[in-house]
Length: 146
Image (cartoon, rainbow, N blue to C red; front, side):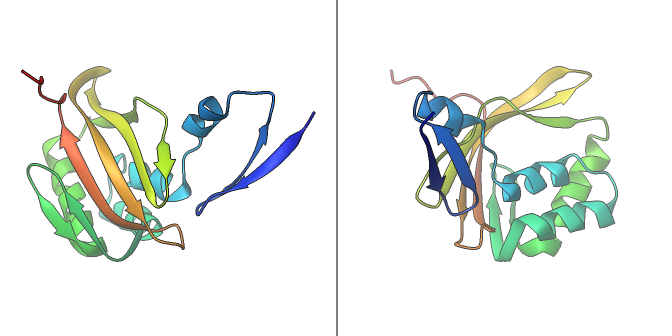
């Protein structure tokens, strides 16, 4: 088989030229995003803070329709508040990660007892070290064109 190495800012991937490149691309999850999801699914503030520290760069910004946070401490506090309000919630991937340049996008759901209560998508900017610079989180489906 003919194998080629594709280098991206966060990881190296070996992709067979006989397989569908886009299919392979969509299943790769950068380490910062894995840590970011682990932070959302953690319960103790120390565990949350550790995962956020692993994912975020200096002064990372987070935006969603209900909150804005800058840095590890502010975002960790947001997640701790979320956990207080929704202790049984689980945040799950509902797509692969689509990436270009220094940007990633994917869809997710918040589930309680395996039932989706919120769906959305994120656009995440990363730096050359593979740390998150900014997260732009959107809730719900896109509006109709009409």
